Length: 112
Ligand code: HEC
Image (cartoon, rainbow, N blue to C red; front, side, top):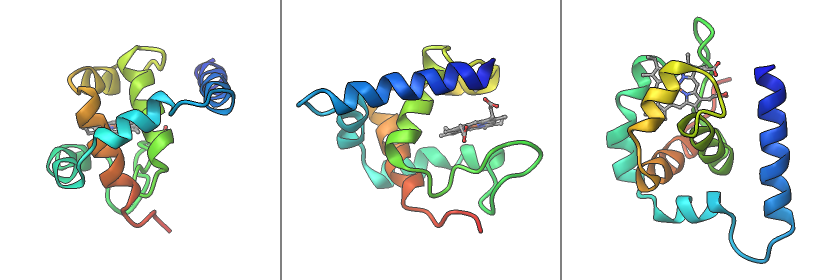
């Protein structure tokens, strides 16, 4: 069920992106970001999201595409995605902070 909701969400955000001349919401949020601020904010994420990749069912976020990252964080913030931990974390972040985290994590080396 969660997967289905997520796939629908990705498809709708893709359509918005494909059929509009303007920047997508995700791109606008990424443009607000600052890598160093993202590094600072990202320190708390590393306690669960290990640098080396997936562990104990927690997905790796290093090297994730910035737009996908923003889309996921917005989905947790709006509670479209159901994980209560990530809903709480995303709920505390504003757009600028999410954009900064997206920039920071997208330029890290993805896990092998
Ligand atoms: C207390 C542990 C914990 C912390 C701290 C944490 N996360 Fe998560 N995160 C999770 C778990 C568990 C999931 C998987 C949730 C699910 O299945 O929907 C997740 C999922 C994600 C995802 C989706 C990954 C994917 O491939 O689906 C992103 C993006 C993410 N977290 C970003 C962050 C960011 C950014 C921070 C820091 C601001 C952070 N997380 C802090 C536990 C944590």
